[in-house]
Structures are given as structure tokens and as C-alpha cells.
Image (tube, rainbow, N blue to C red; front, side):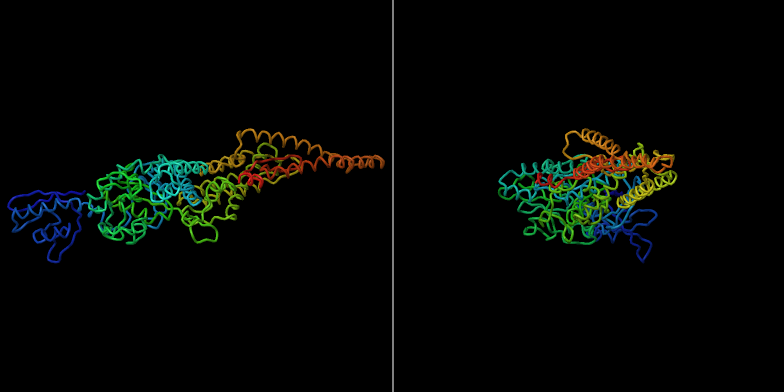
Length: 637
């Protein structure tokens, strides 16, 4: 609360503290500046007050002390309402640029509908709150898409820009949907919530989503929620009803409601609110719901009940971070009414002009050909566990990286195959470059200087892309461009020559690409392991020995070519000797042809199992990819 001491001239000096939100109004009659505090008070004081802009002294004429004391008492009775009215319910919705540490990044802020410089309250630290799941059913790809995308953003902040992200996520473990599902299954809502909470955490681990700094459950923060609601009531922005519910009074904050949506929109949609008749306004939303028969409840000053949906996030975020939050994230479907109501609650409670500085929203995930988002209510979802029967975590993460985090994205076999193709290209380049570095792949001379230049340019361009609202599609394009230039230099030759080798530049490229992919949560090495193996070190060793043996067999089978130079320069040989050598070569080819065929069959048979062997002249290279045979899929089902 902004408090100012006012000096009055009324035969004596009287000091009074008033909450002041000053709007200066220049009056035609003179250079007087009147204080507009609140109409009910102005009506009493306006005839008597005048304030020069220089002296800031109020002159009271014809004003008796007893009358003044009466009005002064009215002022103090209105303190809480004035306080919130001046700081939280002014007409201004304009976003206020935070004071603090400029990270040098720009991010799209839903509060301004544009890119803004990311400024944090404390240098090197980002306070981040996200809405977690309502745990009443299996998580699906729509959930996964949002969590993976923001995991990528947080990894970039932490590992590229050195910002320590303090991330709090709430688990909604009491809700209408949870109660309904538990009743259908004839089990405790607490047990149901715990089961699906653990499944959610397991799914996130499988997707390689880093856990938040802390998970917080709604049911473990009921006392804090009750206290938060009491604070909003005391600030005259909520009211209790005779039925034992508490509602937020949207009219009390005037035109400040709608910071995200840009207008005074209907805040209905709270399940169970629409039929309530004891609300003052249809748009008011529940902070506390009076208990119904057979429902879980907690004791409160308003009777038995449980929290509304929106209040839990406002309370828990405020419990941890106080009256200021750097970043709030969630799916775009949560912007209204959930995040809109969070803002209203927090600014009403903290009596602040701006609670959350940045709201980041991820786009919807659509099934290809559908205009609707993937959701449980529409029954058009794919569970995360079902997804893993066909694709991997790396492939889904690459799928997310190929689109901006705030864009809507279509899920289909084609889009997933595109992600698989990108990973395959990266894996193949790693295999070829590694073979070149170890001398197993013979190439023409490499333009080393050109590759060093391309690597330096890629580093700059990737950094620039990530600085610009975490533009991962542009960053991936830069990585693939670097791989393209590397592949063009890896032109294999059959016979070794005297050309110089340049393994160092390829080592630098591989190191950079691997580091970038690790930053965003994609592991190249993990992409070469078969899921479910108990020992990841055993399979590569076995494959190495197998391919080495095959290469020796294949080299022996191809050794008939050693007679070719003799036959091509046989001017000193008799015709009979020439004939013998030719026949001998044909005989070798016939005898060794089955060996070559066996090598080819082995290569083909191993490919469906995810082991790709590439023959390059007399040498061979190999890689292991995440692939599942149709038989494995059937067994999994």
C-alpha cells in the first residue's frame, strides 16, 4: 500500500494517513491539482481540498475538526478496499516491463501478444510455475507435447544461457473429475489420484522430461488455500454465500479482468458453477465449493467443502514465490479461464499491478485432419504407453523440436516419420564420420577450412535462433545444414590413396552436434540402443565382433580381384599361362560367391532388428538404431 502523509491547514495541523492512488486533474479555474482517491471520499473532501503542485499542502477552509474526524474514520474503514482498488483494479491492463536482469533473450508473452525481452527479477534465476495434471486418467500425447516442449525450453534456459530454473508444478489430486471417476470405480479418490500421479511421473521419465524442482499436491496445501481465500475476502474481492461456497467477485476488479484475453469475457466454465443460484454474478467463479453428499471435504470458516480449480494454483505459486513470478507456463487451452482467473486471484490477494511477468503457452496437438485438440473429453487421444508401442522418446522429442513450442502441431504417421528421418540422418552421419575418424572409411581429400567455417557459422546461428523465442525448428535446420556439408566431404573411395586426412574437424562437428542434442534432450548414443536390454554395453560389443568377422569373410571373398592387375599386364605371359590364370580366377569367384551371398543375407537380416551394416569397398561400418519388428509389436500388444 502506498501511504502518504497529508498536511492540513485547519487552525492547526492534522496528520492523517490515506491510501493514495493519485490521478492529477488540472482544473480550468487555476493551477490546482486535486487528488482523486475514491468517489465516496471525494464527494466529502473535494469542496475543501486544494493542493499546489509545489508545496503539496492541503488547505481546508470552513472545516470543523469533528467533521474531519468523521470523514477520517470513513477513510480508515475503506483502507483495504482502497488498497486493492488503487493497485489491482485500475483501468490499466498494460503490461509492465519488469525491473531486473535482462537475459538477452526474447520470448513470446501471452500478456502482450508479442515477443518481449526476458527480464528476470534476480540475475541467473528464473522462478517458474506450471499447471500439472489432474490425475484421474492416463496421460495422453496432448499432455506429453506440452510437457516435452516446455522441458526443451527449460533445458535451453539452463544449459545454453546458464539460468537456474526453479520450477514448481502442482498435482491436482482433488477435483470433480477425480471424484466422479473414483465413484465409478468404487474406490477412494485419494487412492485413484495417487495411482495416476505415479503413472504420470513414470510417463514423464520415459519421455525424458526433467522433473520440476518440486511437485506440490493440492490436498497437502488446504490450510494455505483457506488462508489465501480469506485474504481475497478481506480485500473485498470475494464473498461467501449462505450455502457455504466462496466466489470471486469479478466486478470488484473492474476492467482489469481479461489480461490474457484482452477483454471482459465470460469466466464461466467452472464445472458445477453454472447452476449455482447464490452467486452475485454469473461470471463469478468458485474459490471454495460447499461439500456435497459422499464427496471429500475439509473444514473451513465457511463450512465443509473443498477448493475450486483456479485457487489451488494461485495459492501454491504464491506460497513458494510470493507476490512476483517470472514465468508461468501451460497449454493454450488453459489460458482461459484458468490462467485468467489465476491472475485475477493473485493480483487481488497481493494487491499488485502485475503478478506474473511472462505467460508462455504451448500450442494444441491435433490428430492429422482434425480441427479439434487431442483431449480426454473428446475421446480422440493416444495414451503415452500406446505411443511407445510404435515410436521412441527420441522420435517424439524430435517431432516437438521441428515445430515452434507455441504453434499448433499435427500428429500423424507422416509427421512422426519425418522426425524419424531426421534422427536417421543424424545417426548415419555420426556413423560415417566416426568411421572416417578411425580410418575405416576412406575418402577423398577434405576441405577442412570450409568445414571449420561452417561449424563456426552454425554455432552462431543456433545461438541466435534459441535467443529468439527458443526457435528450435531454425536451430535444427542449422544442425542439418552442417551435417549436409559434412556428408558432402565424406565421399568414399574404394582404394586408399595418399590424400591427407582431417579427423579433427569431424571430431569437433560431432562433439558440437551431440552437445546440442543432449541440451534439448535427444541422445544420439541412446538412439543406437535397443530398449529393454538389461546391459547396454553388451549388444554393441557383440555387433562389433560379428561385423568384424563378416568383414574378414567378405574381404577374403573379394580377394579374387588381386589377380586383375596380373591379367591386365600379362605381355610377358604365354597364352597358356593367361588361360590358366583366368580359369583360376573364375574358379575362385564361383567358390567364394556363396560367402558374399551369406554376408549380404546377414546384412539384410540384421536391418529389421535395427543393426545397419554399410559396406564400403573392402571395409564395413555399422550402427544400431531403435527399431522394432512387427513381431515385437504384436508381442507387446
